[in-house]
Image (cartoon, rainbow, N blue to C red):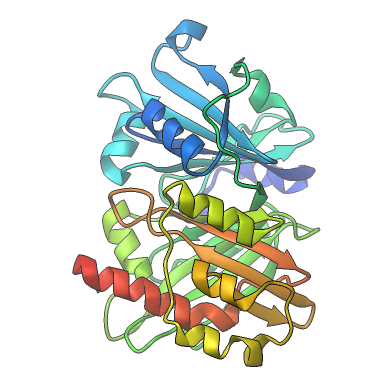
Amino acid sequence: MPVADLDDRIATPAGLKLTGLDHVEFYVGNAKQAAHYYRTAFGFSLTGYRGPETGVRDRVSYLLEQGHIRFVLTAPLRPEGEIAEHVHRHGDGVKAIALAVEDPRDWPEIPLYGDTVHRFVRPGETVRRFEPLPADPLAKPTGLRAIDHVVGNVGWGEMDRWVGFYRDILGFDLYQSFDDKDISTEYSALMSKVMANGNGRVKFPINEPATGRRRSQIEEFLDFYGGPGVQHIAMLTGDIVATVAKLAAQGVDFLRVPPAYYEELARRVGRIDEPLDELARLGVLVDRDEEGYMLQIFTKPVEDRPTVFFEIIQRKGSRSFGKGNFKALFEAIEREQDKRGNL
């Protein structure tokens, strides 16, 4: 929906006092099985439930938590309706990015790119909506602490429109910007702008394709997701080596870069605290800016469709998004695209 077409009432949320990112809700085909995966692979705890037993007749939802991260997994109970249609079109994917605000007033949610929405909730409201559950004996925590950013993919020429949405509707500012010279390989390219709230704690990068010799990862996502949507969620950890080791042991698959990447790493980023041999063994990438350095790694898609994936990130002062890793990372993504026949 073009920003200019949004109902005039929606302009008011720019005055809301944002306190953080409250939760991300996924619409999935089978919430019970999806919850099992996020508990045993990513280490989330099942803390709440909503469904027929609690008076909800059309859906089942599970609340999962780890650190300050909340995921809500929702599945339809019947083959018709919005949730079933969303899953049919997109596969398992993000429906809502919920923002915690002091006073949501009369705007519970507003439309975002594709079928995604931003939801406004009071702090603590989400947890109160669920039937609490006892301590989860199945969860295997991995040290994930908080959501660093949520990345959306939009179509050709759509990035600046949604930059305007965040600026004009939500009062966000441009945090960082990358063009096709920053994010390109021999075959493909993309552009990205990062929007953030006033204190920079809530960040939303927006990607769009750029012209290249072959199809970019953004084009592949748009094709298989059936339009714009959330591409990946970056989750913070205080010890990426320990977290990634646990995730890998629990079945999470990660993208890998060639060994040559690590031969040049010390020269490129300088001294770091983490052992290079461990980073190479796990496949963790490192980048430095004027404020420090950051470590990151990306999972392979966690759905059968090549759509949604996750980033694990640790910040050691850096506010960047790994610009120095873009080429190696996107070449790794292209190798996976080629295996699928989608490059």
